[in-house]
Length: 391
Image (cartoon, rainbow, N blue to C red; front, side, top):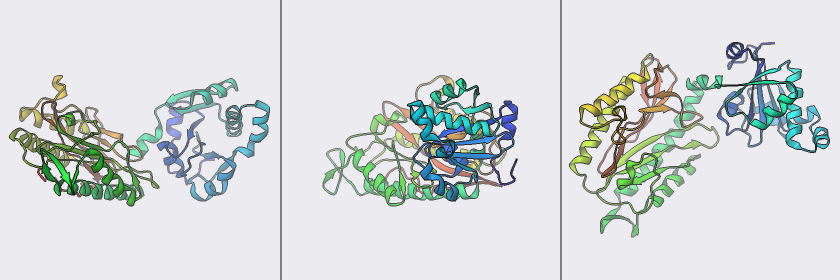
């Protein structure tokens, strides 16, 4: 029976696909399963919502009490409720026995036509098909719900972004306090490298309950490759792109920020690139409010660069502005809504990045990125770090 407590009702999507239920199998690293259950677990468990919006989770036996206390889903079943140990012995394969437990649970729920996310485990689907269940892989109905953040979610993103601000300040300060020795930076008597800057970023994030993978500290011409993480010596008079996208280890929500700095003197070309990126970003941020199309924001950024004489990918160029203007941030670092060519309309509660950049292999790259909350009457910039090119 449908319950009023289910604020994540996806029954309309299930009816559209003529499905009896939506099934997810994974752990808390799966953003949809964490979003739908609020259960933090490194062990595999299952979530199912039926077409009448009733919800059930299937967890390992030892997780029952914790699931009953922590999960937003009130109906908790365990593998042993379906005689998992007996099934495992009979089948001789724990993975197949797990599928048998899923099958029994789905039968109890009266679900035969099952909708699953597009990354659903192949083996589980195949075994359940043999038991007479049918499957349709669909775009997750939770993705659109996740795009519009609640006050609680916004608070978690703020916490992660606060840590990101502190980490960026620590990195910038390290570069600022360095001395130029033989064309590269020296910090307290040691050569400053991308690895050392990344280490101070990681330490700051850990101290504030966050973690990050793939942090970018890219110096010089290599920074023209937007996702190059960077390595080796930090050179004077060359651009340094720092891109930090940490996740709070407990809350699981991400933050995101980029700054480009230089120690020493910037050439006129680099200074002009920085001013163009800054103008494009400020213009784009000013446009953010409910009802605005993301494609309009992206188009305006491209127009600004083209007016300034810089190439964009719209003209087929592989240099200049070669990526989208931004993306949603939440339980994934890249999620809805995309701020690019698609005609997606911004809504209150969206959290997006605005991150224009310019990239030329002969001089390097410039990128600035802020994290923006769409509010009822406009936007709020969640990024406190100043924008100063020469440090």
